[in-house]
Length: 294
Image (cartoon, rainbow, N blue to C red; front, side, top):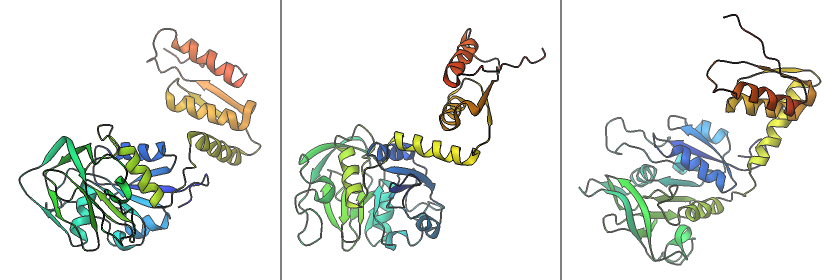
């Protein structure tokens, strides 16, 4: 998918993970635009958005629990690069013919990960660790949080790392564009997590062209197009949402914006005056301050 700003998009499929927002943020920190979508979104709708890649998030469920959210039907065979994280990795393993087992030994917190040689002829990096981990330390700290364990990789996949309790800690099938990690690369406790995400994005063909500056320019252009030659009025409370909205509209149409300060009575002493002063400085116009009856 090409984002409206002209950059690639990665969709993060949320299976109820506490870190879904963090995954999307880390992707954006790699300068690739990302959005979160629910696990209930059909594959056809996901593909209609034309994402460059998809990330399956973690989640609190067991893949064997009744009512556990499944991967969108047909997504793993749709020909789009996919990275499964934690529960997302287990969905990939179980859904493609591997084994996820109740071993009685979960892993929680900092865990030592050991890289394994990649099998030749798989299309990925032949060094230990494969596409996502090659060249990184042969033993490194990752962050785990799982009860079930991947014990057998699906046919056509290579196991590229393991831990003491998880024989299948990372898998890949580069020819299919499918990758899975049992650990959480998005958290800071995983030593080389950002590098893992960068390598997946690179393998998926994502170009690092998105920044916050892009979105400011994009939104400013959209606002200018929507208002055209007209004027706009903005209710300004002093909070982040209304302040950012006012700043973007002012950048788009300049002095044709009129701000009205709405004093909701929850600001600290002196903040109302500060908001009015700042608004007047932004817009070079007096910020109206209606007085409501007591």
